[in-house]
Image (cartoon, rainbow, N blue to C red; front, side, top):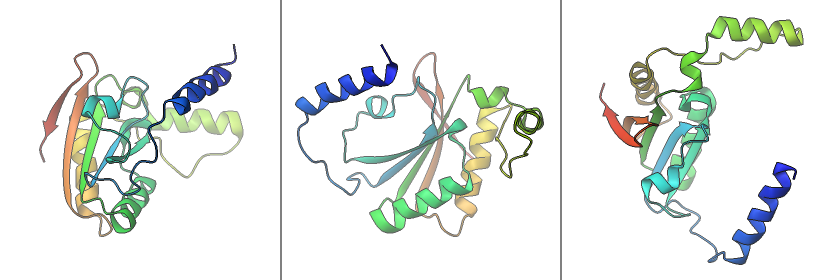
Length: 161
């Protein structure tokens, strides 16, 4: 079966049990920035329901200009006050060399992107760097805390600056 068809069947079953509309504004006033890694089930891990938090995902859970744009909208328009940055062990971005990645893209497409992939070697240092980007941004405010998720144990370790 086409995997998208399977997902649509799953959605139909979900809709049949749907409890109704969730709050529009995140009740806990928290925005979580994390990786798109399919091993991370943010809502289950943090024990939240729809309507309680915002979840912003990208490759590596990195703070990019788009992350800052999204967090700014989350805070200014939708009332979040806390940012929880969660990166993780065994991340694909920790195995990515930016220059090799960009060179491969340029070879395959004839164009070099204007963005950087964001490869890193040390996940804790990546969290620290990204926390600093958030704290230094004039557009993002509130409380910022950073964590590393161990994908083998599902435990969060807080990272301090």
